[in-house]
Image (cartoon, rainbow, N blue to C red; front, side, top):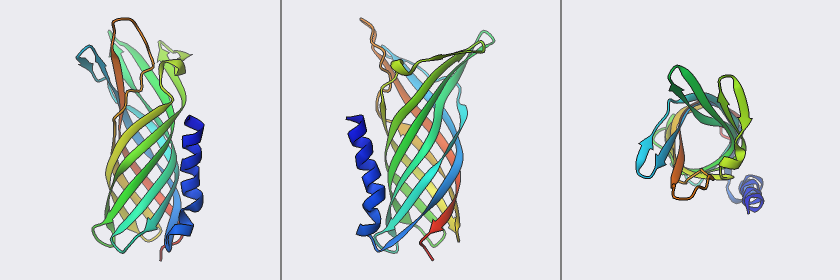
Amino acid sequence: MKKQTLLVVLAVFAFAPMAFSQISGGIRLGVNLSNEKYDVEGFSLSPDSKLGLMGGLYLTASLSDKIAIQPELHFSSMGSKLDVLGEEFKTKLSYLSVPVLLRYNISENFNIQVGPQLGFLVSAKGEANGDSEDIKDDYKGIDFGAAIGLGVDFGKINGGVRYVAGLSNTSDVSSDGVDLTVKNNAFQIFVGYRLFGGE
């Protein structure tokens, strides 16, 4: 199922230019300030945020002067960190993220973006006291979330800020009598460069 979903997403990038008259696209690089929210039997815990990189590709397919569809494909470093009695514990999660956003142009230079996002888990590491271990089996392969943000365009240079809220439980840990829910969240800041299309 995960492979089929990824193939559908890649098909969107391959055939979108055939469906819209005005297509532009480029590359993007930024940072994530990510966190995880844990909920165990009604008790919630939010560790400290972790800084990570994000970057990839985007397409903007205009429906009108005001409205466009903007699918993206980027690598995203997520996770969290927690200090306990002076010792730091980290989770380092790597996702291939695919937001598909509805973009509304407020003006020539500013826009609002909102839409769903799928994340495909690439790797998961747990780190404590300098030691690292693979914890990918503790996480589900797909993360579903919602994104909202503000974008700017100045010629070929663009950028923005965005918040991504996790909507699905990413934990794949099963234990009798324990109901564990883990959700990803991230605040993103990024800059981009338009490679084709537009003006």
